[in-house]
Amino acid sequence: MIRYSSKAARLLIVLLLGARMTACSSSQNSAGIEAAAAEGSQGTVYYVAPGGRDTQPGSMNAPWKTIQHAADQAGPGSTIYIREGVYQERVKIRHSGSAAAGYITFASYPGEQAVLDGTGVKVSGLQGLIDIADASYIRIQGLEVRNYKTHSRSAVPVGIYVHGSGQQIQLTVNHVHHIANTAVPTGPDLTGRDAHGIAVYGDRAPAALKQITIDGNELHHLVLGSSESLVVNGNVDGFRVENNRIYNSDNIGIDLIGFEGTSPDVRYDQARSGIVRGNRIYHISSNHNPSYGPKLPNHSNSAGGIYVDGGRDSIIEQNYTYDNDIGIEIASEHAGRSTSHITVRSNVIYNNRQTGIAMGGYDEERGSTTDSRIVNNTLYHNDSLGAGNGQLLLQYDTRNNVIRNNIMVAGTSGVLIYNEYTRNSGNIVDHNLYFSQDGSSGSTWVWKGREYSGLQAYRTGSGNDLHSLWANPQFLNEMADDYHIQPASPAVDSGSPDPVLQDTEDMDGQPRVSGKAVDIGADEST
Image (cartoon, rainbow, N blue to C red; front, top):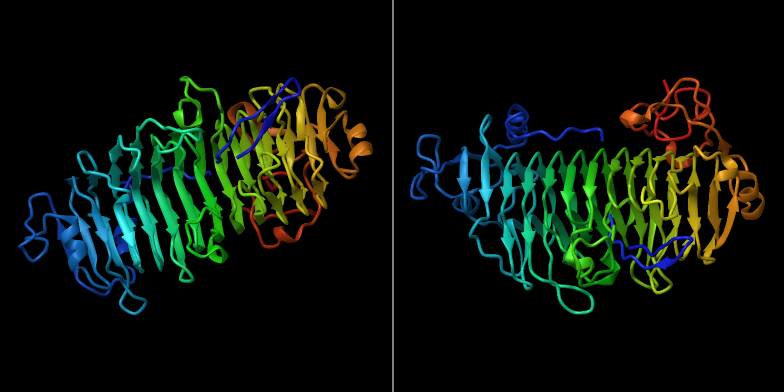
């Protein structure tokens, strides 16, 4: 969440935030799915088909009818191939594979598309159309999951839901869409309207969910209320959220959450040790979401592409987040609690309405952002509403963070950094490249509530950015949203070494240092 202030007025807007990959259908990836399903699978291959019967042996010529029956029968190493067709059922997966025998794999048959359709399937409480609980060594691959909906305030539909404890869960190349809760939110907090596309809840302690992979999925047209498209929440220790495409939904794209009480033990109640890499997130907005206000259309502009709310020790890199309400936010909504040790690097963030990157509590009743690094990102024409939040928004209680080697190009507001709160200490802001069409003197930085016009006045007043540049970064073609830098760009070899950049890659997967020194921004010129 963030509190949004403009120079003209103080407006409270609650923000529940929120790469290059192209989402692939399962038919386009059937060979890859078949190979992945076979890898590590040493058990029986079973088949499910719309014309089958659960009294049959589940063979190719005598398939089962329901996926649930297959889930009940399958043992470690089994592969369940689901033939093309529509299956209107809710699937509960409770059996596990094993390290020795292999995964239990559920996959569309190669070259075909299996669809789990929730039309008419009742939602009771927090439930997944595919529901994996206290299981390990499970793969879900190449399935379409759709139309799981409710009008009830007491129900939370989830396309794919992983919960309890366990390890080695892989959700890959699935297509999740039209999951919805259309209940009317009530009360002062406008609660009761919740849904998720994919949700991973570590709700046991001390046993965690570990080694979770969510890769290559497509999520869109989700009606989420106060919830998220893809969420990792609670006692989840070790996860990878990579190469997903998330778009056209009414709340946060990807969320890493802590301190919500998901884990029964607060010591384990943080999503941690994760990587969020190579995702493309766009057209995420709360403007027509009644959980943000009673009027429609509602202009809250409160949803973001990627949000870390109380998570820790994770990396957010090589993502493209654009045309959302916010690009990336690392914050904590809970007083006395911190989002910490988050690295945001090599991301391309542009044309987001409120701001590019936000950090800190949205007001003085919230928590903090500490010991985190925002390095080598490219931020272009965010704050597109022109409200004055800038490319980087520092909110309440930001401590011991590093903001270095970023390209920031202001939009129509001319604001580059906005920080109205004085509870701000130990932050290092330097070796960035700033630019605006209005020139340095026509651009604005706000630091600890004081406004500065021009880079030199800001340096003198704040003590920040003593080695930073004012220059046109010379992108290849920003009109076509190509934010690679030209060979003659002043960003080339102008960055400062940073420990988190060792053995890392730029926005395209190229080695981070290709010349005399690191380049500023997400692109390392070759």
